[in-house]
Length: 289
Image (cartoon, rainbow, N blue to C red; front, top):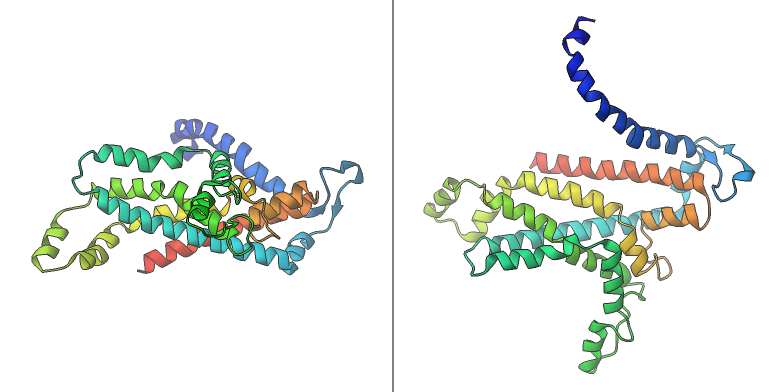
């Protein structure tokens, strides 16, 4: 009681935030988990709910479709995020040098990140069109056969990764640019006096100093890519032949095409746990190094 009296103002100020978190985060998550224990469909509410316990989770883990979608999601996440961080780091290194009109270059490279994913999806779907798209027009102009970037099972997911790289590389780039301006100069001056070349300086000084920024980029972008839906759905809809059906697209189809709401909510919880595991993995790897 004495502690409550001493911290009454603190608890009173904290109460609105706690209420908001409980309303928009904790309650929906709890309700979703509760719903995942039932067999039901929002499209057919008259059929009622049937309690089946953890059977929805067991059904997903036994499903080949789930594991294929998970492998595609993992490939998409790792391929997009690590490439974005690598390219962002290289461009940031180049932009740290004194270049005339550097503000203009920084503005141009940052534009894609501010575009809505649906808009990006439709623009690139038009540009990649096999009949009249910009890229296939260039390919046809040099006498080559047009390529079905979004209609090929081998190219669909890779194409989506490239579109994601184009749009979201500015995020780690801006983080690296901000971090470069705060790095101490003394380690770099010492490395120069010791005769270290550019590669050695980057490997042994720049990257270790930027580890917190790399970790932040990995966590934020991995979580963002892991739950990407709208851009993928616009570009391919999960096709062709489910070649680009990641977990988010599978979740949408289970909920709104097959109307298996219980299974869809179970899948949403599995996705949450998987994204947490990815974050924990990155934190442990970078801390160990």
